[in-house]
Image (tube, rainbow, N blue to C red):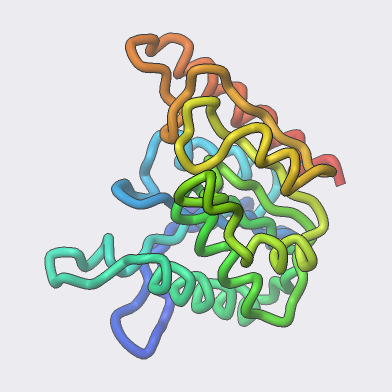
Length: 219
């Protein structure tokens, strides 16, 4: 495998990212976006990145500028995450990956960036993986409108979350994504962790990696 550290240009500071792929240029790209409060080296995201490369993808995990430059008070709220994803997608287009050949895997804030960016852009995407998607901030307030636009531009989505996630629940997820593949892990929180049960948490992460591999390689 060939790995590289890259800096994706923006009008300001660059976006830092890591890539991994085989010697020959892959036909498809697998892009990973982290959540808020941790980086692209998060345990699950790192192994998904490695899995995608081994499965034949141009695997890329991209940081938000607010993480890389947080000592300089670079912001990283939802709007900034959406903006940063736009620059990453522009970069992938420049190196030859059209949207239909890019699978985006977002975790938490990454799902908001994904939904927001897809809603704003003209392109459509074949697949996306939504790890602990933020469908709402408060269940009683309903699903964010951007998810309706997102569904019109993404062929198939795979939702993965826990039953104790405050931003997504099985009933709402099934109503909002009736035709999508999804897995809800009993007792898991927004980090897909089971409090005090590290063995099961590790097993959940292993299952997710295998199921995501199956999802992204079945077409």
